[in-house]
Amino acid sequence: MHKNIEEAASYVRSKINSIPKIAVVLGSGLGDFSTELTNRVSIPYTTIPHFFTSSVLGHSNELIVGKSGTTNIICMQGRIHYYETGDMEKVIFPIRLLQSLGIRIIILTNATGAINADFYPGDLIVIRDHINFLGTNPLIGNHDNKYGERFIDLSNAYDRDLRKKLSNVFNDLGITYKEGVYIAVTGPSYETPAEIRMFKAMGADVVGMSTVPSVIVAKQAGMKVVTLSCVTNKAAGITDKIISHNEVILAGKLIQEKLTKVLINFIKDL
Image (cartoon, rainbow, N blue to C red; front, top):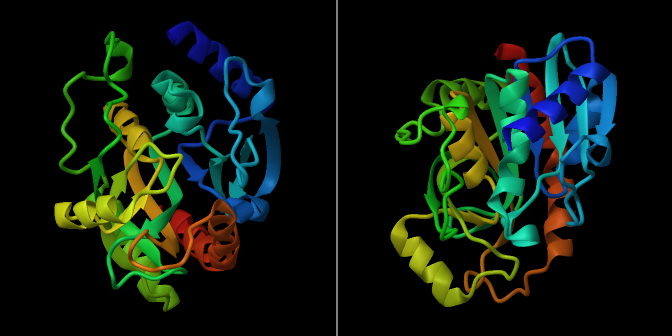
């Protein structure tokens, strides 16, 4: 895997003049932020050696390097989900690539279903912790010291200092937000009402099918992580409404203006 990552990193370096220290990963239907970048260089996933593309609607499959204000960033438009391949190595490859490129801060976004009764579609949630319900861990298997320690502490997986900075940005912009715990499931089927009741009892506020493997690998790499969840629907059993991926994409588009404003101002303060 190391050889493949280095080949991918070498290719990306050949396409850009300088390597940013900050990366943003945009979730389902949340790609508008990347259009705000200036001095853009777009690198399709299909051209990056050993990289994998998402087959899911709402993921554009491009690595974009540019400036947000005066700050250089790398932006991933789309991610690979575990349910697409059943291969965790493919899921975490982009994070290992970002590690190889020298990324120090990673901002993750995702679309989620609300478990907490006080969370509604259109809400932005700052994730403070997670529950890994994927049934696996991205660090399982042969260990390579190049990527960091095997046994990593996740007590501050979602960096407290970055969350404080993000809170200040929300307050300065006059945009309301909430904090919560994210539970990751494999999908691709949505959860049953009984599962949602169980997740609620476990302390989860929102549910999704991504993010947690990326967080674990990024923390192993020594990156600082912060995650913003966009609530696109009420989870099963919380409402009688039928959940669909089209609903998720449409709701994501409605929240993008607010998300983009928050990201631009947050990155400016980093």
